[in-house]
Image (tube, rainbow, N blue to C red; front, side, top):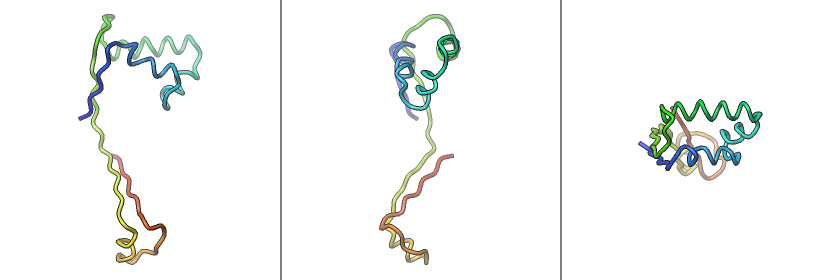
Length: 91
């Protein structure tokens, strides 16, 4: 479980206004009125009421990334490529 604490909604929202990440890129790309609507909707969804204050978001990540020597691939009969093989997966 990953927890991220925020001092206020503005603490959460500020990075989006700088265009940080994919979400931020979207936020700065929309018209001002749409941005205000989005902010109001997310504020209500996260805080549940007009009161602002500290809150915590929790998430669970189901992703893995692993590397193993390419020699393991060769032993399995797969052709050689680079000397490392990377596996990635998310559910």
